[in-house]
Length: 133
Image 1: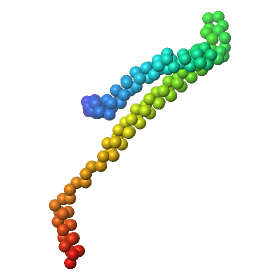
Image 2 (image 1 turned 90 degrees about the horizontal axis):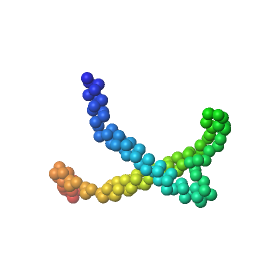
Image 3 (image 1 turned 90 degrees about the vertical axis):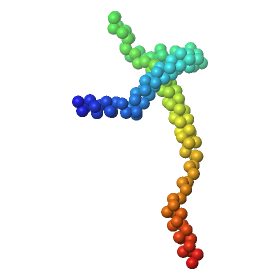
Image 4 (image 1 turned 120 degrees about the vertical axis):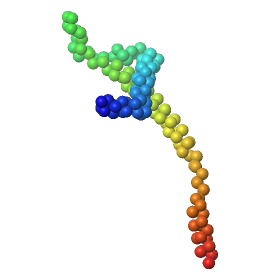
């Protein structure tokens, strides 16, 4: 039973829950970006490059024979995945950059130094008296 308690303590720590939430949100964000790239960015880009649909670009390695499907190297899907990655990486970079700038603003406000303690004040007075003699 102690193993179950340890697992529960591990699973319920804040950082593990935050990570799980981040993974779920990240997966949803990835789908949104994939749709944005495939449905919004790639059609105009393909049109500019001469009516090219990137998702259908492929090299045929072996033609279809009878009921056997053709063997293809689908480099167009790979290009689209690279676009997805670059956009996601840039979005994450912008979020982290924003968070870091907010942290810097918080850190830039210096805290007022604490008032000297009673002992420090007395020691300072004693030092000043000895220095004047």
